[in-house]
Amino acid sequence: MPQVMEFKLPDLGEGLTEAEIVRWLVAVGDVVEVDQPVVEVETAKAMVEVPCPYGGVVTARFGEEGTELPVGAPLITVAVGAGSEPEPAAVAESSGSGNVLVGYGTDHSRPARRKRVARPAAMAAAAVAAPVAAVAAVAAPAAPAQASGPVPVISPLVRKLARDNGVDLRALRGSGPEGLILRADVEAALRAPAPAAQVAATPVAAPEGATRIPLKGLRGAVAEKLSRSRREIPEATCWVDADATELMAARAAMNAAAGPKISVLALLARICTAALARYPELNSTVDLAANEIVRLPSVHLGFAAQTERGLVVPVVRDAQSRSPESLSAEFGRLTELARTGKLAPADLTGGTFTLNNYGVFGVDGSTPIINHPEAAMLGVGRIVDKPWVHEGQLAVRKVVQLSLTFDHRVCDGGAAGGFLRYVADCVESPAVLLRSL
Figure 1 (cartoon, rainbow, N blue to C red):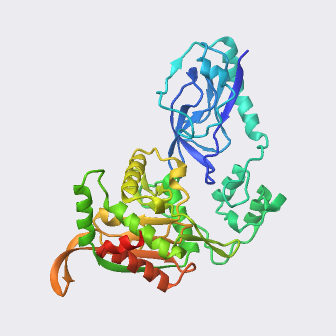
Figure 2: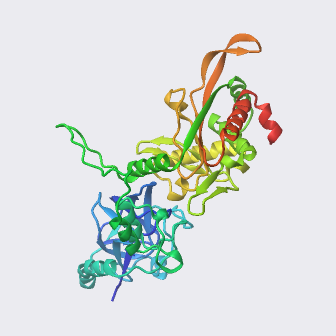
Figure 3: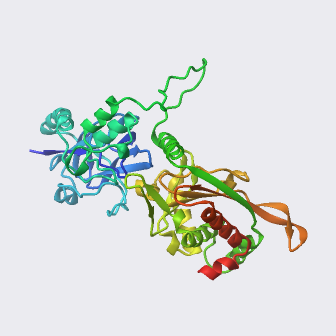
């Protein structure tokens, strides 16, 4: 008698509450191995292949492509120990591997295989019964899990309820044990009168032939984060033009030597980490609940990457301890993952400072919006030949505009200006950077 195991959409981390089914990788009747990807989903962070922790025969799938599912909803059911004798590894590990996402500790070098088998009567009955069991499982209370992030919320359904109704969980005081936020707390916030400053959204009348694009997935996440940044952060921007001629010459000399090529972005990143060591207030975040500024010990450097799905910000961990060569390699690796939609949620979270090279779009300047909950972002325009006074003489030099947007709560203009001036000095004379290494 086969044992039918139900695999639910796992918690994908960082408070994500739902995902959209993009593409099924298996069909009902297929034999799957432990940790074989079974579905490709799109979250607000990235495209993710979700592996199944059970080995056996797929008896049911839940949700069509394009359907959004909440965390904890059933994805598939698998009949373990039945069918056309699944591989020994699948039978031996039928209790599940414990992995959540592809690449989190399991070797996925072997290609995914689809094997269709004839379904015996017992399996057919299991396939019919599986949807009923799945509905019952969704209706049952979820087992407590570790809360994700600083907000004391366990249930993904509570997070989804808050998100769908625009409730900021960080502003709520939970009535559960140790301040746990419950569904009743969110519902109470919904019943409370709205602040006078808030204006209810009304549908926009669109002319005939207009196209409506849902603000969901990545685009919706970007819109929400940028809106929150503008609502919560009192930002200010300062900028300066810098002569990048010597920096470009130094890069050319590096790349003329043996070894991997160094990108301009990597050199700018190394300059940023040196500047943040001098001005650590810009590598911080504001804890509103505690009314504190939290200075962070490591620089997890985000960088803007444009993809077909939109703008994403991959994060280079511990950038302060990396060489220009290491930074260049990591930028290249993460950019390729971004373009192919293979970034994991962990690659897109946890940043402490962002470097935005919008010069690749052929523009000189911009006023960046801070990547909440960070405290600052450095924007870099295109490096272009311009007339410049160099050593008392008018000359054609390679000039770049640098823009720093910062949270005025974490520092005043003196620190922000000092940071930006140090960055500009390193761009104009890379030898300045060598003094701080």
